[in-house]
Length: 321
Image (cartoon, rainbow, N blue to C red; front, side, top):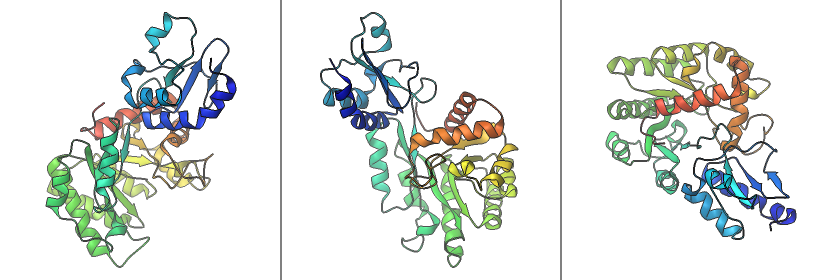
């Protein structure tokens, strides 16, 4: 029998395993115990917990005394101790897209994606890394898109907040990324900071050469950039900024954007949303960003969670559920 002391002892390990498995929390059931990692809710279970290799192997390693069973099996048994996978939304799995910032470290990004069936990656060079790394070529980027887990291009774009002296190099790199996005059909993840004019100029110029999918990552720019992006069919991705006291300007813009074109993200390890501002950001915190987005759009949380998840798979078509 797993008692309360033992449960509290292994709780940090359980939370880590659940995160790796794509779950926000777990629930322990038996005759006397009824605990969850965050709050006591009616459990929503994975259709077949046994199919989640990361979760089942991890739980068996740290608590071999506790059986792991599916919801269907559970219904026919007494209330033995067992673990259930609880999803933060509505019983569907979590998915993660990890972004590349330079080619030197891309193998590490790809290794992470290859280690988990619900984690994907992009390939690209952040504009702030232009000085430190040779300009990436079209062929170099294109070759990496052949990996099954590479579902997007970037992040790439223009950043004049940190460095105004490398605009020419940033633009050349940006246009290379756009070309690969256009030719592969993989969405471009756009970074823009302090550079609305140049970002709009380059995106519109390249779009006239041929359409390509894109998302404005970690949106904190102008209404003009948002509206021009929507006109080109791009998506807008929102971070914890919309939960900040000074995020009202962004929130006012988001009010007028179509919900079918919105995503939520971390920009980890930065921009953790309220109530976790100042902490290292993590995927579980997107819940708070989604909650704020629901308030902005005057819809319920499940509508936002469902719609943004759907938007992700529409945009990142190569991602496999």
